[in-house]
Amino acid sequence: MIRELNTIRKKYRRGMLRVGLLYPSLYHVAADSLAFQMLYYYLNSQDDVVAERFVLGNDGAPLVASLESRASLDSFDVIVISVHYELDFVNILRFMLAAGVPLRSRDRARPLFVAGGPPIIANPTPLADFIDVLAIGEIEEIMPLLLDTLREHRGEKRGILEKLAPERGFYVPELNQSEEVTFTYPRSLPLEFHPVAQFQPYGDPDWRLRTAIETARGCFRGCKFCLEGRIFNVMRERPLDDVIEIALKGREANKSSLVKLVSLSFFDHSRAEAILEKLLDEHFNFSAPSLRAETLNERRLELVKLGGQKTITIAPETGSKKLALRTGKYISLERSIEVALTAKRLGFRSLKIYLMVGLPSESPEDLEETASYVLRLSGASGFKGEKELKVTISPFVPKPHTPLQDEAFVGVKEARKRILYLERRLAGIADIRVYDPRLALVQTVISRGDPHVGRTLAEWASLGGGLGSWRRAVVNTGLNLERYTGKLEQPHPWDFIRLHPRAMWLRL
Image (cartoon, rainbow, N blue to C red):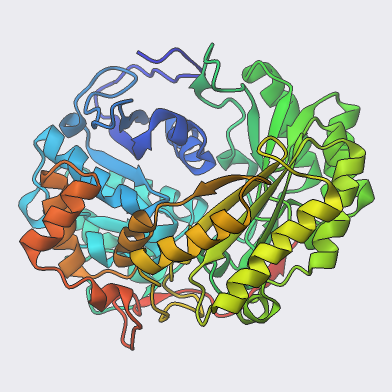
């Protein structure tokens, strides 16, 4: 059993709705997901709902007994799944198999399975045969309507499915395969949906107790490779007073004065500096992991440092100006050097750099420009060595709905070749970490997948998951990988999902 803070154990009463809340990854990943935290506490705030959690065990096996009462997954009325990573799709099906639940929706009377999260919103079709309801929207809009429908048509699967309309953000494959489904979102971030007390491991040396606070949701910048920026392109700010209220109440509930500030780009909040100043006045430590170099100046870096953060992150993605301009994210070397120099002078201990290989039209010259970018940044700033300079290199994965959705995946062999080139050029100056190109290939296939990929997911789950089982599943189902990794042409499997066409910024 996991020793944790803020577990909710509600006594079941006759007539209550029993919700299994599933995160198809490890416990620590679930605890770090603010969306999962929101679901857990919002659902349990309802008097007639009891929600209990399911996660993977430390060995990667599905735990089909709930963390709270050890109740079996198949004993719940509905299973709500929060998923944020395409490779976790297979774990959803592994949970079903482990619980003895029929995989396919048409073969299953209960529980009702509902899934949501960015990869579901982007392209739900790989899971369409297995999940009853795929949520194309944000929690604040989706959950109240879903709960009302479950209450009204309790135990009547057909009645529930017929009530969940595509224009309200619900994709029900059994009923509306040919209809457009509209992404739905709240115009503000209601305080009632943000948990103060947050479940987290207690006494775990690998976990720092903290209060995670979503300061804003969305991004207006439009980087052409970014899925979350495309989906959540309506920028909404949480008011300063609400942020501080959550922090103050969270300090007691979570037994910590550490705050984690969650957003896609913290300093895009119009009151960002005021938030940090107020947190300092109230004697909080804090971290703001999502910082864009172009939003930083000496004052802002000083505030972040005063909050206790020891690492600064820059994500140029590429050192090639040509590629940077084509992808919509250009951070000049001079700007990066200015930020890094200031960070070094203020006493930040390390610098993280995020890079991609395999961007469309990337040439050997572009790769050399990227290597030169990092070398010059290190030399000019003084961040050098494995403890001070950390570089993460990932292959480009084309994502649905983004301007680069039709571009080809570079391929495992070629991605390895390009990564190796950068590793050799940067040897000795940085701690280099690499996202496995084999995983990037699988991620590409699933993110751009269709029901054929769904059949491979089912076979993969039956084989236990893992890369070796993936290759066997591909062979067993005859999946043509090139169909999903090569350059695409319209129409796409996800074209029926209607996102919002342009970025907006709402300050309410």
